[in-house]
Length: 234
Length: 234
Image (tube, rainbow over all chains, first blue to last red; front, side, top):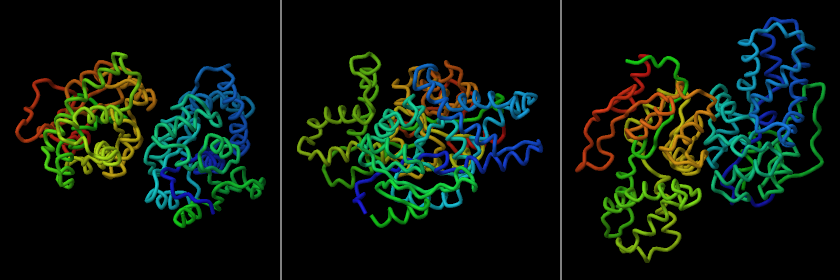
């Protein structure tokens, strides 16, 4: 195992890594008592995520926080899902389901253990208020909230990672990026951060399990409790 | 009492309001076993605070985080206090005493109660890493860390307050600024925030007790436990 004794802070991808966005949207959908394929809505919503951020990266859109991108994507999905009749109040509530996402079962225990030894912070494309509300709702006790919003650059742009390290006042090699997504980790490594992969095979649902990746990172963990155990060995 | 039912978040001044900077520096000084007037050092250090920020506001200095301003001020004080011989390591440790400040005795209980009902965050001239380290050291469980650093404008510049409200995604009238300093509250009110004064008569030491102010703000509290009680009435 690589020497990670100089690590001072852990930054976490959130959607898919800390919280189960797809499962939560489906679960919350059941309480709406609307005849709707909530899994398809969740998948359609998330499918619009990368293209929407790309419009910001390309300059077609000025800086736009994720809440507003989520709403633009949702608005585009309404006709296909027969949701045109929803009131503005209900649409706004639905759009904020991303503030109410449920952590994976191992996340709270793992984070509690990791917090004993390290500064822990999200480093997500979610805006600061989204991440703050989510933490309060889910009981995630971050040491601080870091977000692409603070750099006005979405991950995997290098500015998102470098701004986080600068705000932590740590050189990138003392910060460990934790994510279930290889691209996020590759981008973090390219600015000098250390990397931990956490496997979330069910992020896209039980019908589309994700295989263990071929690529390796500094740490390879089955979940957050395993990550805590690995970090306690270093 | 004014109607504060629309308040969603509380932002806190930190130095003097949440933590006792002067008392902590004197206390920590005792452990140094150096014959030194630590109260005078604390007072001299703090006396350099406003002028240093003014150099940033005026443009004489580019954006400079508070850790670095603290160090510049400290370096200027070394000869008068006979501290020129300190190693760089000890100087850096001394400079970070601002990361280790002790909360006033009522602060943790008050914040715990306020957190039940509101988003709570520091809004300090301290940089984000200083505030994050302080929170971890003192057990302050903020929902997120807000700082003048995120606006690159020191309070009382309006940008510092407006950036905090924008990041919280709240209109200023839904955010209550809490401080022991009238100027901070006046500046917050001028951008539309609500204001709570908390009395810290001993901030400048027992020889210089601060009288209760003539000016009034939306809430006037004896300490954080009193502030929590007032907020529970609204």
